[in-house]
Image (cartoon, rainbow, N blue to C red; front, side, top):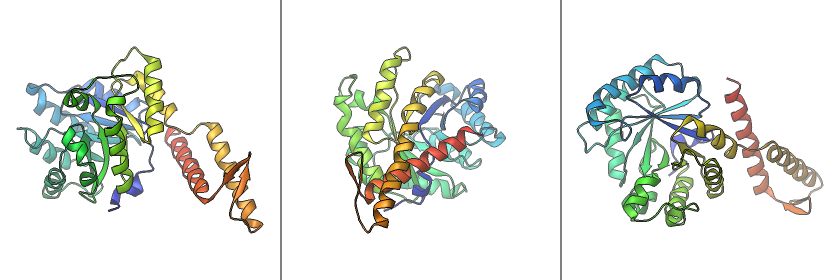
Length: 297
């Protein structure tokens, strides 16, 4: 199944910043941050006695606007909690870009949320995203990715995942590489976005850069972040460099020249260039252009 949101997949999601929904100053500050996407959080970042106030604040913030081209995603509480259903009702009324469901473990959980979006009249442009953060959720990644045409993407919840696996946080993340790759595979097969988990040590700049680079290598679209000071590293890592763009143009030019001579393969700097390389090059150039447009806002 290729999701309706796959056409939306190309939008830049290099940096996806969590913002606590109960903090009005943070919600206001987010309007000026260099984040591609914002997760306005009603779940983990909000204390039990602040849940209803956070819901009101987030709904008001979305309704009042001012976030420019930033993608607005609201992480709601689970539907098995006292707040989840009301979260979806309130958020549906203001129509953010997406609603993020925590601890998704089955297609049925996605369908239940989708039915509520319809019941509460959410705009069709509001997609559903899934937190992938439990062993059962990871094992059902393909089922979840194919569960709904309204599904927009996966967000890795690596802290909960490490805890549930009884594993360890390590610099190379070997204990969760299988889980990360399973979600990338499922997301790419379904044509949805997939965002890497957070890097929690706010004082380890080198570690953050390395984690972002690993996310790029694994195939993620971007990284979830806990603090604005992490934005620059993610934006740089997940964006094509000037050298990448220059090389992409060279790949296209070499292949077109070969085609003009009736050849199906070109040679560039001693390396073969085939049609698949041209597709990658065109995608990279398009992504760079989207980022340029967004940053020119």
